[in-house]
Length: 280
Image (cartoon, rainbow, N blue to C red; front, side):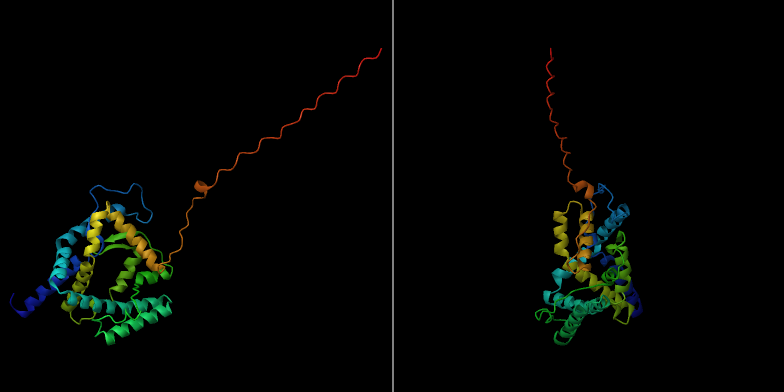
């Protein structure tokens, strides 16, 4: 176990285990109360029974591994270092966001994101600093799931992925492409890729500690809360914050009650003419 090769194999195994556990992210931070089910089936969530079980599994992994690691990372690592790590990872992600905006036909947004990457890479010491934001080049993240949506691909059913959390069938397909462009693909060695991938998710989980604490405090059914919030956020992101109004088939329920028919007109009785007097 003291040889370099043995230590490298151990490092790879530990990195893989941390990566899998760390991939819980936002969704699996709390499980729904036992036996809690929706009162009626949700059209967007036909697999709710299975999704709740996966959600509960993700929660246990999060509580056992990812949350303690993220908490220690937040408490031990200096804020200046954590900010630099967050900036570098965000700058790498901005490159893929610019590419997705271009694929969606958002030429101006793609150009702005490209200028953001260039500014932070050159004047921000490779992305450690973020001088682009004060200059008005704010981050507008896009992923391949949004690109598929802009091409007309529907959401599909809501699904909770083991260790990866809430998604839809469309976003799950987009995730396969997104992972090929992340920061973890940059290191030339497998151990380096595991390390960067673990750092990505631990950094994200640390950023979400306050959010998930609030979720634990306010949500009665955390599964339903996370599902509805995820679907609403993805819909909002697909339409850049201006989703169209949803159409509801409520014509019968909201149709005004027709007024009663008017009563028939009263007929005026004409008195009978008096009979002519009898002549003698």
